[in-house]
Image 1 (cartoon, rainbow, N blue to C red):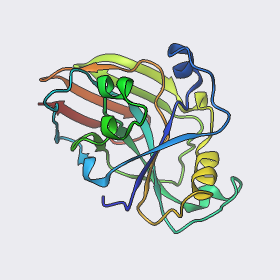
Image 2 (spheres, rainbow, N blue to C red):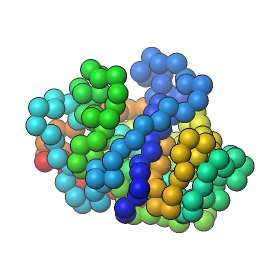
Image 3 (cartoon, rainbow, N blue to C red):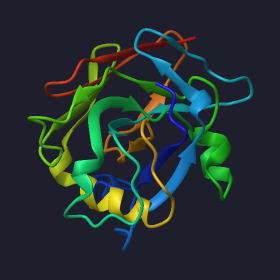
Image 4 (tube, one colour):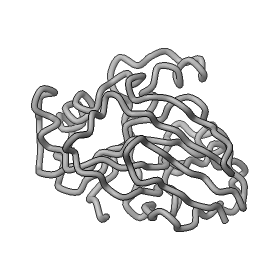
Length: 201
C-alpha cells in the first residue's frame, strides 16, 4: 500500500470519548499520519528511544477507490475500494504533552495495516472490532458506536482535501486503549477481515 496520505479521525466513538471524560465533537477531528509509518501484518512495531508509553488503537481503515472532492454523504461510499484492520499506534506520552499530535502518531512502523477486503458485502456501520495484547482482549466494541459514520467522514474530509485512489482513512478507535511493551504481540480483529498481528521490538 502506498497512499498519498493517511487521514485519521480522532475521538470518533461515543464510549471512547466517555472514558477520556471528553465532550463528543460537533464535527470530525482529523489529523495526518505519514505513509512512511505503514507496515504490514507480521512486521515489527519499533518502540522508539526516549518514548515512555506506546499505545495500541484498533481502527477500521477505509481505502479510497477514485478521486473525490466535495462529495456528499449520500454518495460517499461509492468512492471506497475496500476496508482493512489498522492499528493507529501512538506515543501516548508525547501526545499528552504536545498540542499537535503529529510527532506522537508519525514514528516509523506506527501504522500497521492489514489486508484489504473489497467493499462489497461489508456494512461499515455494524462491524465488531477488537484488539488483543498477548491474547488478552483489550478493546471489544462495534462500529455502530461511531459518532460520525464512514460516509460522513469521507464527505467531511473531501470538503477539505482531494482524496486520491489508494488514500487511507482511519476512522477512530473504540474504548479500551492501553500500553504496549517490548515483546508484546498485538492483534486487531474486525469481523470478516483478515487479522492484523504485529509484535513490538
